Length: 225
Figure: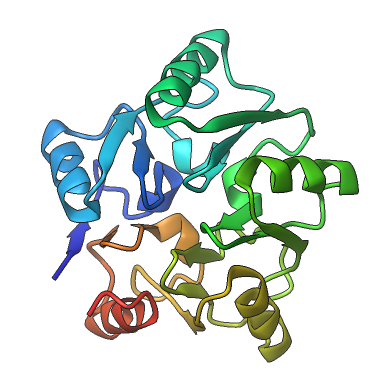
């Protein structure tokens, strides 16, 4: 079973600190070496340590799929230099969005088939995201909220979203991401599953307060059984 339940220095909201796709994972610097190695092993991809806006909240500030990484305007020159190294190593593109909405990872839910974005992004910004990620991009909410990245976790095999998402939202997200979508929670009832989980097609790393039924729903939805 490619599931790891853990915490980062007592914090169960793992998705705030990292994000993964089918080709790589980005995680905050403060994660222990033991968790860093285990993360890479469970997800089956190379992991990279990186800060975002001088914080360890890489999952909150970065959004990406296997084709490109979207970053906010508040990243530092040192962080951009690090991203350029990743760009060369991974052969991915980088887009720095100039929007005032800087928690990019909370506002984009993407896989390698599509991307759901918050309605706070303009048409021009949506087109830039589309060109970078190389997939269909469309606006939506989840449970009536704009924070689609923190209220959902998506891979190329499935997507788990906020338990209060409507049937209409669920169907729209299925159409955009082209995967099965289901509702659920993590960390003993938190509906902000994107903030709780780091996952890709091969595995998932989740807070150790996540219950057995929540783990089962996640595994079934993301087809990790």
